[in-house]
Image (cartoon, rainbow, N blue to C red):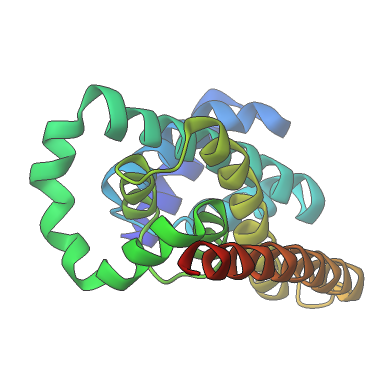
Length: 202
């Protein structure tokens, strides 16, 4: 499936003569398709962006496409096609029940964590967020940060394959700093939440 998507996309790029960030005209709909029914991994789109635009611009394009798709799918799940998503995906959430509980407890941090690590498909993350107690504004920025984190990680892995002779130390070091900053913020937030829970239980 990945090879077919890549061949079809490359053909479409050659046929339309799209270059630079205009490739998003093709890849945003692909990201939306991936974020809705998940027939191929998002890493395919990241690799496509990097191969066409280079590492830096490829990651930026992937972030734009991923963030837009994640937001649209969230809105579709929550407002327009909620009944269809319930019928289609609710049974699949059973094996992710503990993550749903974590999402309810940690909110935006749950979204960021799930977007960062390939624990579950993107469409289920959007669906779980839509039926959770997360506000739309909170989901919007957590979706952006989570996509940035996940795509940054995918980018490091993809770039090492596509450009094996490229020095990725700055990219890797920047990602480590980014993760440390997120971890520190989460630690303070979680500590305050524990204090609040204890005060409420007294």
